[in-house]
Image 1 (cartoon, rainbow, N blue to C red):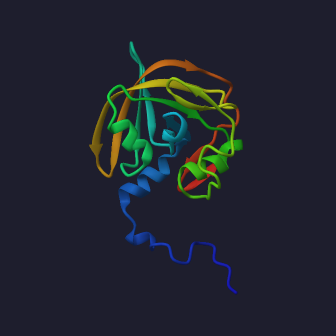
Image 2 (cartoon, one colour):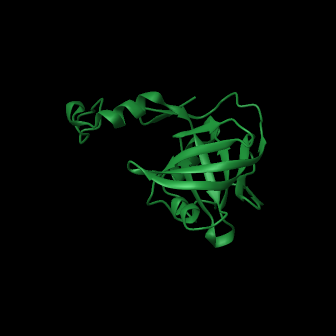
Length: 170
């Protein structure tokens, strides 16, 4: 058996999309966007996001257009969601919501959640924003979701979960 330093079936570097590689080098704080209640809950790990400070302020995220979350936020007038920032201790949860790790019993089964009017919030998340969807549009291979921040809770984020070049770090 041979141990490879790289994935043996990965696309060779010279054949990879340059824009995708550029995005991977930017990196960013990993967030979890959630919406819905009961069986209609949906969530997605998102690291392509930014906050636009104004009165009111907005959070803008790029979501997978085929995700359950995108479907719920795109097809509902006045859709609401919770944007919560994850910490290193949440890296397995981030993998589950990204569809990269099995989630026996469903995405919301293994952790404790607080049901809010904006959607489920991870009980041990210290930093989150309650949001109302303002605009959704297609951009590239994503949908851009712009949400008005209704309220926010800012905890200490000493060990924030980061995503860069396809890997989590802290």
